[in-house]
Amino acid sequence: MKYADRMGKLGTETAFEVLARARELEAQGRSIVHLQIGEPDFDTPPNVVEAAIAALRRGETHYTPSAGIMPLRQAIAEFVSKDRGLKAAAENVVVTPGGKPVLFYAIFACVDPGDEVIHPNPGFPIYESVIELVGATPVPIPLRESNEFRLDVKELATLITPKTRMIIINSPQNPTGSVLTKDDLEAIAKLAVKHDLWVLSDEIYSRILYEGTHHSIATFPGMAERTIVLDGFSKTYAMTGWRLGYGVMEPKLAQHVARLGTNNHSCTASLVQFAGLEALTGPQDSVDRMLAEFRRRRDVIVDGLNKIPGFRCLKPHGAFYVFPNIQGTGLKSKELATNLLEKGGVAALSGTAFGKHGEGYLRFSYANSVEQIQIALGRISELVASVPR
Image (cartoon, rainbow, N blue to C red; front, side, top):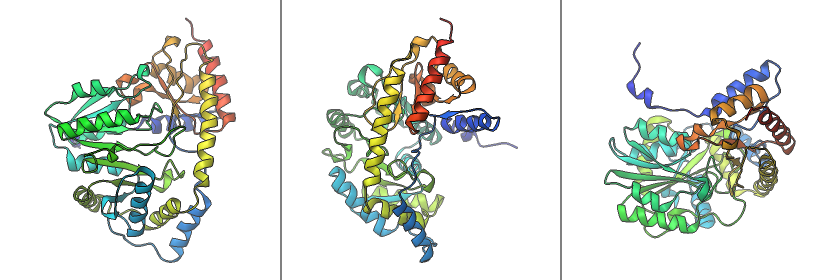
């Protein structure tokens, strides 16, 4: 049977492939430390779980509007207005089953075949995948260690052409943990306004920030009408399996995105939306505790990696990933990641899983206990020591 040519343009997430292989090794009796998957290892807060159970019991098991239930959309609008100073109403909000649909729908609604979309590299691999799927051209902007993995705004300006339609930014960033400064965002905003560009601002890690204040590019002059803010509940409230995200955008685009949702997924599960409403409006102490624990783990893994010969690791400012430079080991990224899993019992991702500019780096997720991180550090050190130089 023949398959559509477009399937050849569709990428994947290596993290899930590495997870599958790690599970195979565990089934064989191997001990594996999981530092590959971008998923908080905490339970969803009990009040959120109870809200979902209560919704089920009162019969919240039916279709909802494609854009989401009004109480949740209003709560999201109030949250972003208070948290980021972004003036928003329910008409600006579309609720989706996870954050990825916002990415898909925004690109489908705003980008035509032949357009160019600038995206971070190394960066979340689904950006490039969706850009290519719609027939547009992905234009990578390198994120360099010398600039703390923040994009260089002067370099960004050189990549903009008459075909450029959209810029994608991600702060705090996956896989590097970098955070764009307020000055960075202001300069990007001026470029977007000057060239009449859309900006897709992936802010899924906005509340996993270790110092300073999160700034959204949507709050800068001229940006509210051209920015799509992507956010969700997976990372902040340990709700990855619940599949609940949202986009904040200008009302006309919100209507287009909701219509794409109608055609694709109909609506987000009703009980999940009520759980999200409780997460956003209920106690936030679980978020504070999780952030404090992530900060503790960050310090442990950064200090430990910097003691391993051949490794050099910056301290991330947000998210829960480290992106160490491993060039001193003499190994390519994929080779070292494979050896760590197959021989060392540590599941990690090659930097090249996030684009060609990730060569020479690995990504470790520290969404695991300090005890497991310390075991991983010992195994990494032992394996690297066995590599001939």
